[in-house]
Amino acid sequence: MGSVAIVPWDSAIFGFPVASFRAGPGEFSHDLVVTFRNALTAWMRAKSISVCSSTLAPTRSFWRQVLPQVGFEFVDLSLQVTLSLSSAKLPPVRSQLRPALPADHTAIEAIAAESFSHGRYHADPRFPKHLANRRYSQWVRNTLSTPSEVDRMYVLEEGGRVAGFYHVTIEGDVSDLRLAAVAKGTMLGVELYSAMLHELRRQNVRRVVTSISAVNHNVVNLLSLLGFRFSSPEIIYHWHASRQGQSKSLSITLRPGPPGI
Image (cartoon, rainbow, N blue to C red):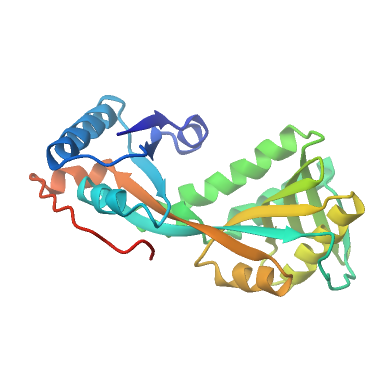
């Protein structure tokens, strides 16, 4: 049927247990759907889980019907994004991009704390926004406290101050663009992304990958402008413990559905 586990990183940040459910590869009967619901919710009650996430490809129509009927709600749609950097045509940049220094940490954390409004926790209307913001603040704090050859943080300077940051990983000739933001009141998004791609090309990176929320239209447009390609949509669901007392019965109707969204 699938597997479920506690997510330690998010649980530590939020201060309550968070879990992730991975759907199994097959389908099963109505009776086993009820068994699945009972077993999953019993496990989450036993572990005091507050929020559980699950991610599905749009083609998994069986699970797209089952998850909502056992308490999961749609919150976001993510896209995989790639760029062949060796052939990309990049716009010129005028701002300085450099590796982050200890003196930059406060500015980076301040930008991270106020710049994000997308991602599955921000998209979830039931989830507290201050905790969704805290997740990004902790993300950059962890990255800055444990620098490595793979995990790297860069900053964009404008007028002698930190105006944006970019966290990337570099492994061989592939880079994963993990997290980026510019300070409020600036118009440096294209500049930040372009400068980062120029820097990655300088370091002989040939392929760039990342994952974004499909409703983050500004970044979708920006990546399209830079030549990125979009693929592999995934539907993201959240289950909340606070909803479970609202429904005392389970009515499941399994019917064929369209393969996509």
